[in-house]
Image (cartoon, rainbow, N blue to C red):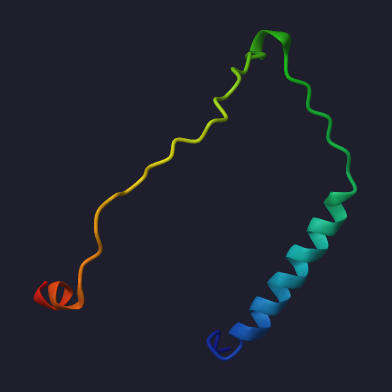
Length: 67
């Protein structure tokens, strides 16, 4: 059997199997509780965003052509 000829069928079958297993396991409830010894405090992030202002003049067409 030539695998190159049947690559589309193999891909579609793998996609169907992957989709079916993802739907089958999606309804499973997973409870993950982190142990108290592993809890880490999260620091408040700085919400102000730095701003950069560029005050250079634009190149003329002749200056662009010279580059």
